[in-house]
Amino acid sequence: MHSNTVNPTTRRLTLRAATAADLPGVLSLLAETAGWLNSRGVRQWPAGGFPAERIAPLIEEGTMYLLDGEEGPAATLALDGQADPEFWAAGDDPGSALYVHKLAVARAHSGRGLGEALLDWAGLRVLGMGRRWLRLDCSKDNTRLQDYYRDQRFAHLRTVDLPHRASGALFQRAGGLRGGALGAAMPFVDWRGSSVRQHV
Image: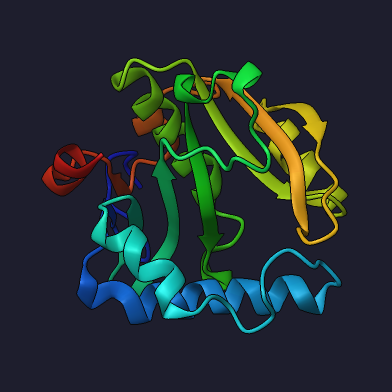
């Protein structure tokens, strides 16, 4: 088989800003991920997922994104400049970063590198917006997830231990790619959708 032959089992995925019509699909994907986490004893997200009133504003603000496949959302994340004031202090220079929230990959697409690719895309947006850091917070107790972010070249800054928050492990990495060329890493993803350029 020639190297430029398209594999018919590889469906193209498109990254785009979520719209109001996508809310049920986003909620379903987040609920699937939350259920999977809770089944593994990870207390990070509510077991049943997030209520619509938590996610709808992200869509309205244009900060919720979908990696969209033919059968619905393959992955999602929110990316914005809103630093959680319970975690990020003035000394962190919160305005120097973009923040990843609600990163989730559908279980049917796990192991394909979609999370890594979305984090690389977010890192490019950091540079495109003239900022320095890509940041996130995750579960204080989920060492496996923390190791995943370390593998993506995030540095653990500190853990903020608040009794009413499951999250609190703070990570950041410099803007840009983790390594390699984005298009080469994920050739079946359309990164240049106009809706992404308009809303990020």
